[in-house]
Length: 263
Image 1 (cartoon, rainbow, N blue to C red):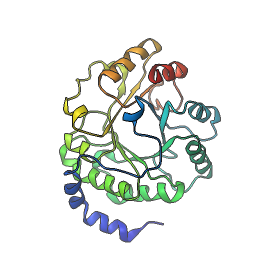
Image 2: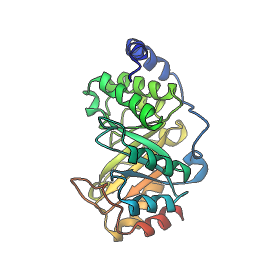
Image 3: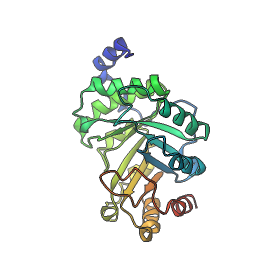
């Protein structure tokens, strides 16, 4: 059930939360889970939009620990309308293997009703015990900072990590409260045209940087990994899968990616 009283309180203080968060250089979360990427080198974060019956897919992720540190699960464009027992068991198995599980929530670039987003944060925690959230469809402009700062505050209050996915470099203020930001999510054709990140991204923020590159053939894998290291990515995922869902299977060169990123 929704925690209605807490929800009203959070919404009423969203702007205040944003102002407080913007004064910080980072947000600490709970002590559980894998070590920060900065301590372990570049790792792989997998958008795993595949149903639990595909046991080969999920076993491949488990077998790839510790090179795979984070997995984003997505039952139905979010936690779904009801708890799913197969997902309960899947999340348990991933965690037992040492993987941090993030629950997927779309935000429609800040336009989605805040009560719906907060309700899904609650459902991930109540149904699946997942406190770490991957917010998708995140706006990159300064106007959206108070909204996403409030979402991050809700996640942090429960001891979780907030990962934002604008798919490009957002306004600098987002780095004051997000635990990780996907600064690139597009086909490989755009990857080598990406601007070099600003100097402050490495020297003045603790926020992790994630890159997600799709439709990349095997002969581009090495170049993508080299560019990700050059641009300071903490997490990388590369696939030759394509739209409409480039995350419904692992890349055909999964083993080569594990060697390239983890080497």
